[in-house]
Structures are given as structure tokens and as C-alpha cells.
Image (cartoon, rainbow, N blue to C red):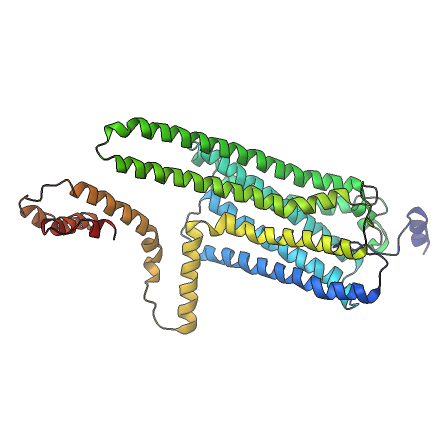
Length: 426
């Protein structure tokens, strides 16, 4: 008892606990109950949706061919961090908002709530670190493509991801345990006003703003590099166009290259735009609103503040779902793996054999584009051949590879006077 009295004398504990999702205020209990019961389930459902989407991407790794590329490796780890962040945010909203405010059910104590908050904030920093690592991965691949395999290795990526997963939550737990008379040093973790003070919020916001700024600079430089390469290739193609007998071929090649560059630029804009839209409102709210900040916690009515925090949380959760689409679902390897996973589950549930052989599915998928390009090249070569050549050429090609068989087939059609376009555009 003497120890407890000494602690109470040294530290000024507050009996009321601040809410981790949005701040409490004196308001009509029925109205508050209605808001929590109506809107917090929406946030929880969004978290569940983000968890399911990211879980599908992570399970698809079982159907991906090895070894994984660094970009794919980082993207899958990013999906894991988004799943982890969505789970912690949904759990925090359920235990700290929906159950106590909506149903007056308290399942966790103050120390458990603090630990959950440390894990949640650490997961956000881990996600930001993955985004920065992925942006540097893209930057090195574009700026120094010849040195990329030696620079971005599997071992290097694994070391960085290990520190990204472990350092942020470990640092936050240690910090929560070093604050005098607060957090884990307070009696039963009753006092954690530092979470609502500008010192902590400014430090945490600087980390997020620094991540956003770094990503913006990197992707802006990538944008300039791609535009410069696009202009250089366009000038090079125009200067060589006079040497080609078929100007349409040059035009098609130029359009194809421009289409690839425009797609890369479009993806870059999606990356930067989604991060800014998803995180910037929450970062500004976290930085500007606190007990000793420019904007006080009671800056507006309870309803206005509730809807504001609801909107910022929605954007953060949606960003976790969009991350997976941008960085993983747009990759061909992930698309093939998800397709194979679907056919495998369908076969196990429904029984029977699928029309498509699963053992050769990825070879079929990956060979389609290359097969089309081979057919196009073969047709362009064959169209210049003399139709009056001896038919022994066709018989001589009977024992060659599959690609040469396409050429034989085309010569056969061409000698019969059929249109070559029927083969070119198959």
C-alpha cells in the first residue's frame, strides 16, 4: 500500500481513458450509441474485405514458380503488412469503440489497449517502410538496370524486410515503457496522455510525411526518366524510318513502345495518388489535432468529429486494399497463380478433371504472348517468299521444331492463294 501511495503522489492519473479511434466528448448517450452501432461495423467490414483480399494474394504464393523476383517478393510482404494493419485496426475499432461504446462490453484492460495501439502504429510504419523499399526497387531497376541483379538480391531484401517487421513495434513498446508516470510505467496503465500531445504526434507524423515525400521524389524522378527515354526512342525511330521498306512496321513499333511508357506512367500516378489520398488526411488529422496543437480535440461538435474520423479511417483501410491491387494483382505472376489456385480449389470441391491441365497452365499462360509474337514475325518473313518455290521446302520442314511448323503451315496456305491475314491475326 505504501508503494501505491508513493506512485499516486508522484503521478497524476486520469480516471477517464481516451478512445484510440476518436476522442470522447459529453454528448447524448442515445445519439452516441446510434453512431457507434451504425458506422463502426462499416469500418470493420472494410477491414475484413482488405484482410480477405490480401489473404488471397498471400495464399497464391503456393502456386507461383520459384525463384521469386525481388519486386514480387516485396509486393507479397507488403500484402502481409496490409493484412496485418487491417487486422489490428479492425480489432482496435471492435475492442475500443464498438463493444464499449455500442454495447457497454469491456474485454481488454488499459495495458492490453496500449499494447494493441503500439502494434497498430508500428504496423503503419512497417507499411510505409515497405512502400519506400518498393519505390527504391523500381528506381534502381530503371536507373541502373544492368546493376539491378547484383544490387537487389534476395538476401538483401530479406534483411531489410526483417528489420521493417521487427524494429517499429519493438521501438514503440520500448518507448511506451520509458515514459515516466505514463503508459506501462503508470499504475495499471491508467495514464497515456502523451498519445494526445504534440511531441509524440509530431514525431510519428514526421515519419509518415517523410515516407510520402521520399516516395513522391523517387516516383517523380522515375516519371522524368521514362519521359526522357520515350522522347529519345521516338526520335530514334523517326530517324531510322527512312531505312525501312515498310513504314507501317516502324509506326506499330513506336506506338507499342509509347503504349508501354504510358502504362508505366499511369501506374506511377496511381501509386503516388493512392498513397496521398489514403494517408494524407489521416496524417494531417493526427498531426494537427491534439491537446497542445493548433487544433484542439474539441474543435467541432461530436457528430462532425465522428464523421471526420470515420472518413479518415475509411481512406486508410481502403488504401490497404488498393495497395495489393497496385503492387501485386497487376503482376502477371500473381494473376496466373490466382487462376491456378481457383482451378485447383474448384477441382477439389466439385471433383472431376478440368479442361485445362493444371500442370501446364503457367507454361500455357506465359507462352501465349511469346507465341503470338513468333507467329507475327514468321508471317512477316514468309510474306516475302516466292510463291513459286518448289514444294520440297515444305516437306523438308516436317521434322523441325514447333515454331518452324507454324512457318510450314503458313507457306502451305500461302501457296494455295489464301490470305496471309488469316494466319497473322490468329
